[in-house]
Length: 114
Length: 110
Image (cartoon, rainbow over all chains, first blue to last red; front, side):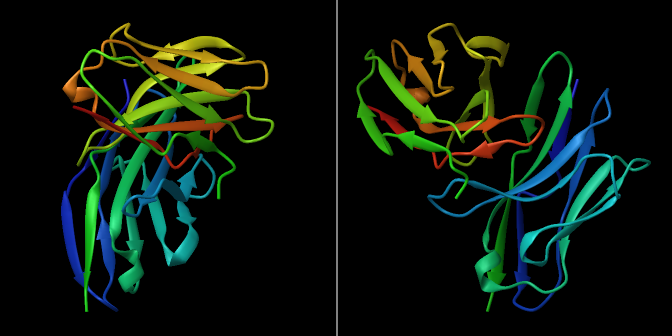
């Protein structure tokens, strides 16, 4: 069975400081992992994805994530937060077991302070 | 923009009523999935359709049902609405592993 745990429900950072959003996963199969962002009253936007290629994945808007199999982690980082980064972030695991199914984490709300 | 559209954007129903939500997939995508996102929660998988057949289902009761049409557009039907059905309903289309999400339909059940 697949599952994903987002370790922080809320993260606050000051503008210009680094962002770290933590995600651990569990999967019986070789997983695909994703980070999505959801701004208020908006749909889900894909930030980046890991699909068994390079373990360091670069996404949009300066975000990146590193797949660490030994730690079963896929943490999202950004060197310098911008006010527009304030949103809800979801870590997602997908694996094929008859069909693809996306399992979402509970989300991390990122607050960026001026 | 993902190319996935949903209608309506907002909907208000009363308990016990039935509702149909619609999704138009991105061109060429033959698989559509539906998710329920309650307030303050992550999206929960409802079911998935591939070439007009349901081929995956989450932990939702049978009063949640769906259809996929030959042009790969899709409907989500919910019967006997309950207050807890109030949520944002998202559809996502794909071909292969990556899903593209629509903006969602906000359903309020009074």
